[in-house]
Image 1: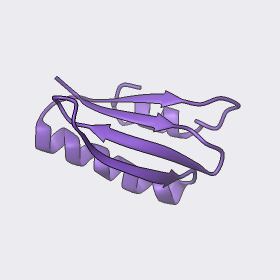
Image 2 (image 1 turned 135 degrees about the vertical axis):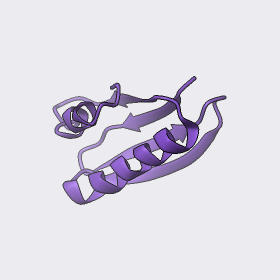
Image 3 (image 1 turned 180 degrees about the vertical axis):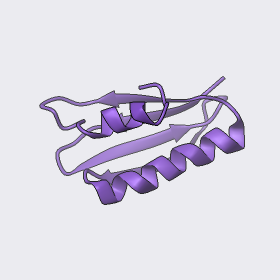
Image 4 (image 1 turned 90 degrees about the horizontal axis):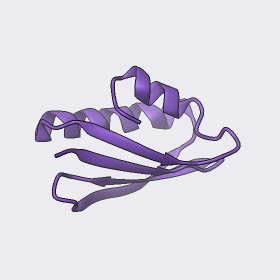
Length: 81
């Protein structure tokens, strides 16, 4: 069991969907592609990690380097990407 976070990477913003164990999508939102948006994103990941007690796994789609630095920050925080 795990919480799954899907990120469709964009140049100016990323589209995020979060599915809890069992596969139900509980959140969909846009994430600004800058540090101010990342902090709220990481708080949401921690919320799901604590409340469901299962690993959070992030799947990202992107090209041309637009996933940087979000992908490395996710991994630094111990989330599988």
